[in-house]
Length: 422
Image 1 (cartoon, rainbow, N blue to C red):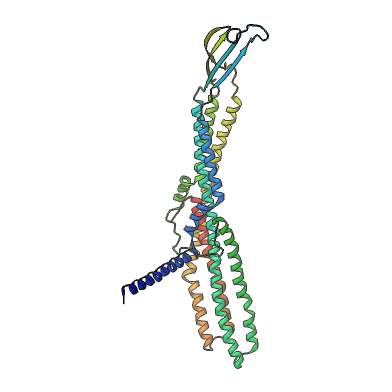
Image 2: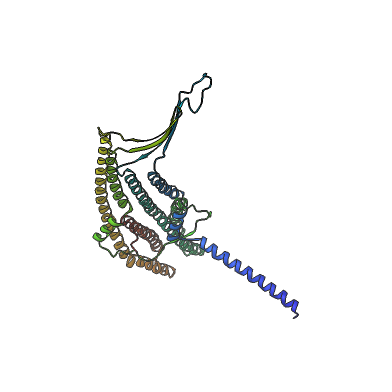
């Protein structure tokens, strides 16, 4: 093989190697697009959802109020002139009239500016915590939709699988009917069962489509076809006691933290309004020319606080502070009850899953398998086999619904606590 032939051979090999890499990369990306797990869905929701993006703007609004609260008032400048002798011959602009230049600056006394900044800073802290709470509730809603779509997808799969088993039975029976081994009445009984399987498949597909459409809207899902949803098979366990979970919720829930900040903010607002009783000082100075004579002067303006003109605002903010404290107490009681309710609900569902998983499901599948074999060998009747398949279908769908409700109850408990429990 010549050198030029070697180069052509290498180019061809490199070309096909590149094509193979492109195909492999495309296949891996296609696989990734066709699968979606819960963690990836949560990331997409936080990154893409426009409603969350709009909610985050409230933080920027609060940050703008904080910047505004710390600004000094602008100084004032005024100019005036009088006594210009219109119509008089020989009148001089600089000697025959008065004109005045005056500048002043308002100084807030009593720490008003600092108190105002403190109120705005607490408002920013509360806004950030409120956004965290919006994300907490949004994630819970997304998890509910994801689990609903996932288990409807699984119900559809198991219903389709058992439908195929039923179709196999019908085909076998048709062969026996043609051979004269079975009656036409038994064939009619088999045909009547088709409605059960078609209904189960259709119901699961319809519910999956509904759940997926809501989920896709939250994710701003761009691909047209829905992916294969994945949920971890790892059991959702809770090691903490009810009392520990309640204390964790009181410490972790962002809505409670936001309300505590609101209490501090309302108290700081009372202090700000009380500081309003102290009058502000305006210091000014200027230049004046009076009929050709230059003069300079300094002026001070201080309102006389003979009357308290801020009592109404102080009373309003004091009432608001008491209201915020009462709301905090009420929210804490509600959180304690919410954690208790979701904890007991989850424990009940988990115990039922363990009981069913260890006994009923295996037994039902085993009965269906044994009945099928007995039917093929002529020992079990057609009605026995149809009944076993019917029980297997209903039990499998009910089992996935129980798994769904158990997973959902765990999400509810996590949401009530305010943090991940795994």
